[in-house]
Image 1 (cartoon, helix red, strand yellow):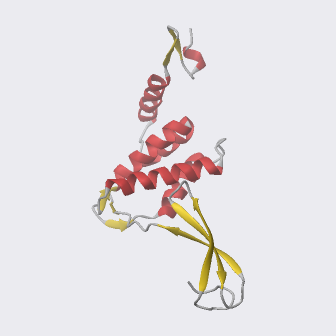
Image 2 (image 1 turned 90 degrees about the horizontal axis):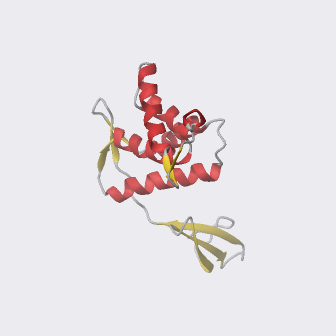
Image 3 (image 1 turned 90 degrees about the vertical axis):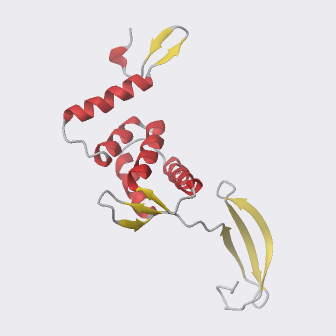
Length: 168
C-alpha cells in the first residue's frame, strides 16, 4: 500500500481490528519512509447483482439510490441515522446472500419494505406507497389494515394494538 503522505510503497501494519459488524478489518499502518501513520479498511469485495427493472431493462445495484429512497421514507421520523445505516447494511447483506447475478428490482423493494415494517410503520407505508404504486385511498387502506392485523399481539389473554382506537 502506498503511503498517502509521501507515496512510499513500503508500509507496515501496526494494529488490526474488526470493524463494521465484523465485515471489515481496520488496519493502522505506518510508512517505512516518513513514519506517518494512517488507517485503512479491508473488506471482502462482493459483486452485487444487477437489478431487472419493471420494463425488463437492467441496471447495476446502486447503494446511493437505495439510501435515497430509504431516507425519503424516513424523513422527519424519529429514526436515528445509525438505525438507517444498519437497515441498509442488512438489505445489502440479504441481497449478497442470495448469490444471484441478477434479481428483480421488486424483490429488492420487498426486502426494504419488510425491513422498514420492523422499524417504523409510517416509513413503511411511505415507501410501500411509492414502490407499489398505490393509485387510490383503497390501496392505502388495505395496507394500513394489514399493519393493524400484524400489530395486534396477545398480551396475557387480552388484545393489544398500537392503534389506540381498537383497544377494548
